[in-house]
Image 1 (cartoon, helix red, strand yellow):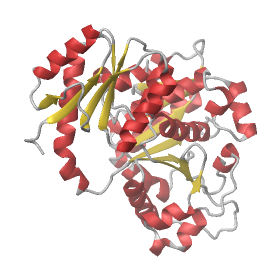
Image 2: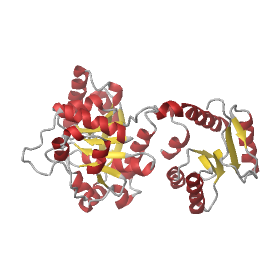
Image 3: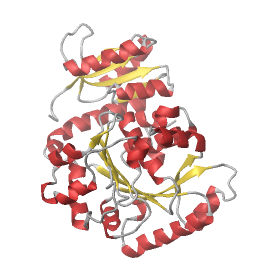
Image 4: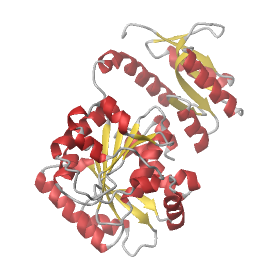
Length: 387
């Protein structure tokens, strides 16, 4: 495939923008510009969107579903967050603001070409999704709220990504309450059928929430029947990685044999705290424990400050100095919206999609969808979504 020319069609009304992109294409090896009256399918369509967003996004979906365009880049003078998110949901690979930045367009084209060259090798490999383990520095810091809404945000922001949510609070899991679901299956079913656990069996027992998140609740009872082992956890998470792009785990705050196995396998460990002395003390203890065990690696550990208030008695800088670790994200305090969501069994975006807490969790999801790229290197589509 490396020797094939990539066919590109331009649907751009602004003559200046069209000319700039034509010049970039002509100076970038590997791309062939189709004639404007061509009826052939193209590998890449670069489309300018205007005012009728609903109709144009329907067109984008239609073009992709029929195969008329294998991939679509969008450009527009509009840069509102709702336009960017809708563009992403419609399946656009890149979004260029106007006036056009030549380097941004050229980098996107090169990235697209590299992706096509890698397709054969990728299809031979099994999927390896990311495991995101959320762990509390103490009880009651909001781990379940973050886990539920982070999973939902990942699924909503990028419909091409499959997302699972696992409740590892084996005794007091609350995810079914937070999502108002009654699942026929839970952890007990996996333990009883450990030898049968594969992708097909897993999908058959997970609850499909309307947010597109597949949920595995913890057992509802305390009868002692559930005897999950580290080996079962290893097998389950391995199957999860092959089945889902993201597996978000509500890990509570305990450290036992099961949570240690999750910590070993996790791609990201998010330690959730609020800005008070007990939480920060426990964070220091956890970081010291991780260092002593040799896992998870420091770069995999992210500190999330929940219920953040700017007038807190302990500042973010003081907290970082105390724990000797950078704070990755702050999630704003919003007791009213959070309790309304919990009491109604809804995700935050259903209660108030424009609330500061929802925006904070959405930004956290964006950082994960960027596939671990450092903050300073954010470019292209996702950097615009995150603004």
